[in-house]
Amino acid sequence: MIRIDILHFDGCPNVLPTAGRIRAVAAGLGVEIDLHFIPVASVEDAMRERFLGSPSVRVNGVDIDPSGRDRSDFGLSCRVYEAGGVPPDEMIASALTGASSALSVSRASLVTASSVVAAALSSACCWLPLVLVATGLSAGGLSLAFASLRPWLIGLAVALLAFGVWSNERRPRTPVSCECAPIPRRRRKLNRVVLAISALGVVAFTVFPRYVDAVFGERSSPVSTRAPREITLRVDGMTCTGCETGIEAALRRLPGVALAEASYNDGTVVIGLAPDVTIGTNDLIQAIAQAGYSAQADKPAPPPKPAATPSTSLRVLNGELDPLTAHFNAASTRVRFVAILSPT
Image 1: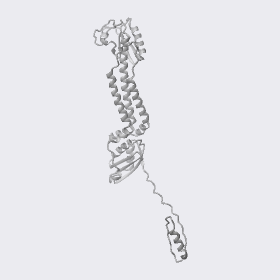
Image 2: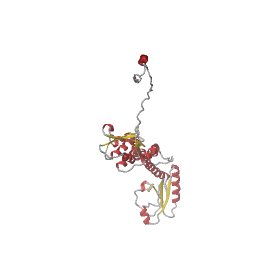
Image 3: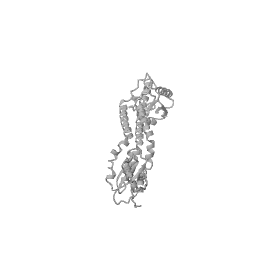
Image 4: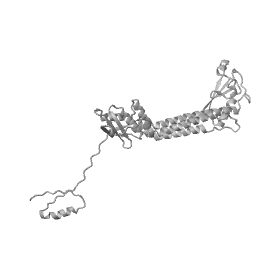
C-alpha cells in the first residue's frame, strides 16, 4: 500500500478536489493508497515540513512534482500547478506508478529472500545437526522434524521464487492518456540479478544432501580395515546420505572413537574404537541421540541351522553285505554311511 500525504492549511479550497483526483487516478491504476491530511498551521510548521504551499502532495514522503523537490521557498501560501491549484492526473499517475514499481521491487526482493530461507530449512535435516554438534548443542528431534517438512518447504521455496519473478516483471496498469515516467530499468535489472542468485540458492539448498560430504569434510575409510575393535549400531531417523556425515561427526567427537562409518542404505553405523578404551555402547547411543537420531545395538544374525540329515539304521548279516554294497555304490546322491561291525 502506498502512503499519500496532502499538506494544507485550513480553508484551502483545492484540498478536497485534490484528494478526489488522487483517489480516481489510484483506482484507474489499480493501486491501493493510504491517504492522510496533514494540516500546516504556522510558519514554523511550514519550515519544519518544508511546505511549498497548499495543497502539497507527497507519495511515500516524496513530492509528486519533480520540479518542486529542490525548492526552498517554504511558507504559508497557495500552491499552483500546471493546471491550476490541483495537480494534474498525469503528475499523480507518474508518482503512483513509480511508487508502485518500487513497492513491487521491494516485495520481490523480500519474497525471493524468503524462498532461499525456505529452501535452507528444507535441507536443515542435514546441515542443522552438523552445526549443532560442532557447537556442542543437542539436535534432539530436529532432523526428523525438518525431514518430514522437507517436501512442503521445497514447494514453498519454489512458489515464493515464482511469485518474486511475477512481482518484478509485471507492469502496473496505466490510463491511456497518462504520459507516466517509465519504470526504472536499472532497478528492475538489479532485481533480476537478485532473483537469479536466489534461484541458485534455492537449487543449492534443495540438492544439499547430495554434496554435504564435500562441504563438511572427507568421509572415513571403511572401519573394518583400520580399527581393532568394532561396534555396530542400528540407527533410526536417517533420511538421506547427508545424515551419515552428521552421525559420524557426532561420534568422532568422543574420545577413543578412531573411526565411524554410517550407512543410510543399511541403517547402521560401524564404530571403530581404539585399544584399551572404556567407552560403552550407551555412550555411543547418547552421542547419536545428540545428533538427532535414535540408535540401538545391532543384534547379530543367528547362525544358520545345519541341514537335517536323515538317519537310517539297518542290521545286515555277513551273507547279505555284498548286495548292500552294490546298491550304495550305485546311489546318485551323497549318503553318510556308518558301519558298525559286530561278531554277533
